[in-house]
Image (cartoon, rainbow, N blue to C red; front, side, top):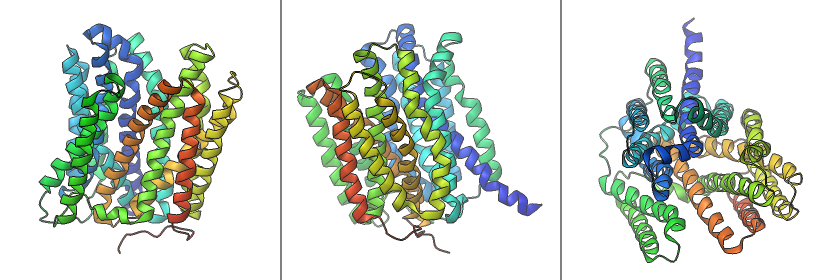
Length: 456
């Protein structure tokens, strides 16, 4: 009986971590549909309404890498519970917001909680499952996250119309409490570094550098790319980020071990994560716009057509994880990158035909590839480092994903504003997939099953 309980422990961890991923990504998407109602109720300006979304993503992106490292130092369980508490309380505060400033501030604090719990969840799954089951675990994890991501717009619309927009935030605290109870009951922290001081210079320069870069990317479309302040902020962010690298190379106990990027496979996995998220923004935002602006469909019909891209990841995530445990990540990633390249070329051609039917096969293929890109990359980026560095590896991969979204939105939006042609967005994305395919072909290990960096 004790053995059964011990074997069941990892599945309880997986259920809790999958739910964490679910509520984190839900809070990225659920706000979009409810935003017009919030704007009316709280008297938000156009810029203010944008920051209801951006405040969450900016803080999330700026802190994720640093928060991942903290889990390696102070312990995953302690940090995870703190992150859950911050996320839950900030969700409660968001629901009670009486002004735009209140809501934006609460959303920023929500971003702090999300930045803490997401990297920790990746590390906890990796610690809970042996190497031969991690692909399956990441497949389940990804499937849950994809389900919540797709659920977001529907949940936001339903709650706003039949209850109140405030309930999109109030549903979080009970879920957070349940997750916390599971973690307290079943999680056991692995051994970690002891007596390691927090790298304060590294923390300050990392958060400032990434934060300024993300802020400039987000504000570029609002202020205009000709605005001098955008380029000054971007330049400052890049300089501080370079300073962070110098600081970390000299630190006895760095916040982020930047030498991890000397490992070509580690860098390539993060590059795939970045591009996969980039492509999601290209498809979900600009195919939706194409269907409504060019083809004249309503928002609801456009959403139904987009199911061709949102449903396949839910169906392929678990099978991808199971196959990953058997054949390794190289073949899956190369195949996924090639198919994604071809699907983007197809979309670039299809949007010139002014019909939605040619879009569907390409969207189905691309949607099926989303899990094939994310699941192996998330598993193998964790396996590419030693157990004591998995927290920071999770933080780095989360930062790569968030930057992929913000850069994708900005680059694609700017390209469309310049050319007015949807095909240019998908052609650019296809070219990026081809480049990353070549990089991965050269850098990913050629053995069938990735070797774990875990020590016995």
